[in-house]
Image (cartoon, rainbow, N blue to C red; front, side, top):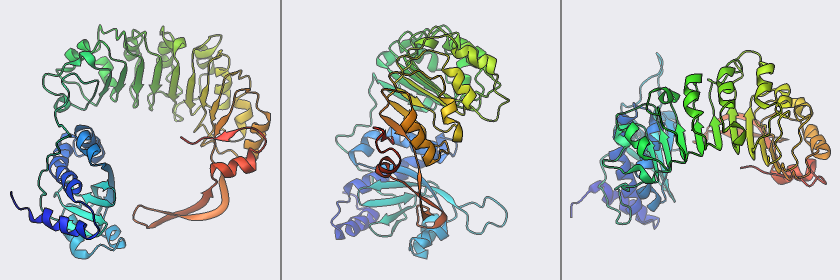
Length: 438
């Protein structure tokens, strides 16, 4: 058996506090070897590299109950945690690069790993590993690779889900006939058309780069089983792109976010509203953008007026009260969940809901609307939704608290939020409404 002094020293440290080091060594060693590769594949984007690592090695990480996150640290931040200067120098080394002229203590992006009572930071630039709990300890060399017998690294030959950032993520010889969920990153590659053509049972498609819709890889594909389409970054979405989507008649859940859907870009919305699935949608999530021109009320009305929708869940953001009133010109007899969060309604809540006939509405999200407590109580006592039982709301108390960074440094000060029970007791008493926070 090969002796690894770094692993032996770590075992001795954790044995003092009665912690088995096997999982820690396995995960930290994995991060030291694989994180630099993932970072190079993702063009230096540590957040994408972390997601890639979590997806590729999900079995091993789940087996060890490990959680991954990202942090930006510098020498001062680590000193505030009580880390010795020698450990800081060994961990950061020369990997921190100034972002502006004269920056004396630049930050470096690192991976944070939590495994029960053990927390550690891994520097992807030099593979240095710094334990921050249960004690400060620097691992300045590579830990051994530990095989976990019940955590196979071989992806299934007929996967039910795939997340592809590029060709490297596609297993050799994969059979897509059982594929039900597919997430596509920022680029196309040669194997995609064949993969899509064979994924006849695909039910969920998430596309991060909408340019793929116009690349030709979806030409002629009817996507007969596709039920959900997510476009989390819809910048650049065009009418031509929508012409592909219109042919996917089975879609019942549509989520479109991004600056491409501005108030002035109604050609895209008009194209979608003419799709056969538009009124058959069960779930619709549209993130509008406030930097567009004034809302074209006539064209906005056309999306809703005199139509009956099958919607059970609706979320629209950055819509003014007049825009909401236009929505209620549609009939939504099945709507159970409505999100008006993040629309900055302030004192316009009553006006925004004018004309809304929603007999089965059970949940209403009103968070991030700058509503006063009095406005919340007025709504709770006067609303006309017979099935409403829960609302999403956030209110603050008059007490103040410090806001601290992950390392304990104070970064601001503000009011202490009221708990759900405090809101219910003070502002919703006698109305039958409860606060939800998912």
